[in-house]
Structure formats: C-alpha cells, structure tokens
Image (tube, rainbow, N blue to C red; front, side, top):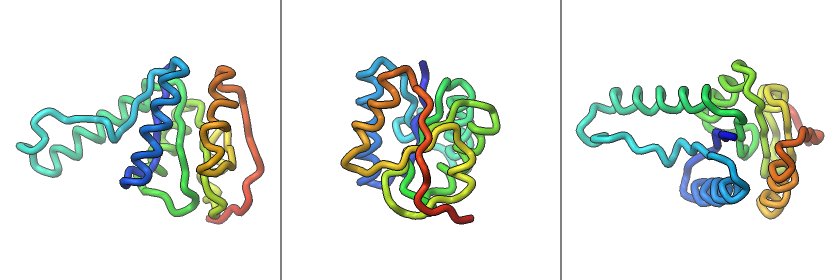
Length: 148
C-alpha cells in the first residue's frame, strides 16, 4: 500500500515527518514524502519551472496513493497541505488526519477526511500504530473545536 504523507516541512516538523515515514515504512508501507522529492538540476531551473515540476510530481503521487495521511498542527497549517488534503479527498483517496495539538481545527479539514484522530506529539506513534498496524482500520475521534 502506498501512503502519501502530508504535513508542514519546517525543521521541527520535518524531524517529525521523518519519524512518521520511518515508522510507516517499518510497518511495510510504501511512503511518499514531498519533502524527500529531489528534482534533477533544480539549481539550473527558474523558480517557476522548479515549482511546476514539484507540483506535478506531488499531484501524481497523490493520485497513485492508496492512503493520504495528513499530520496536522491545527487550523493554521500550510496552504499546500490543505490543498493536498482537499485534492486527495476529492479523488476519493482514503484520507486520514492526525491532529497533534489541541488547536482549533478547520471544518474543511475535519469534514474533508475519512478518519480524524485527535492526538498529541507524545501519543502520535502509538495512535499511528493503532490505526496502521491493523490495515488502516477506520477511526474518527471527536474534534475539540471546529471553525471555518
């Protein structure tokens, strides 16, 4: 099974995403992480050409994934992550959101997924294992606060 792993890619977030990718790979999943993508000769391209290649690669990876997994930091997440989730959901790819904070959640994030898990940084691995060790069983927890 192929998982598209989505989330913010700042330095702290990237460390988290690497750990999540390693965990999922250890469970036998093929994981696509956008931040691992390397575009050949990127330094020789215009920013626009590079951006188009990244965008097209990510879109193809979403379309060829069996599961879309978004590690969310709440309502204020990146525009790219939000777009990716909506695109996956619109293409009927099973969409899992693991929100790792008590922050507010966008109604679009909450309603635009098949599975929503409120968790914390400390419990993320345990909760990921609970869902993904069991062949991605459905899981939907209540959301603490939903806003537009």
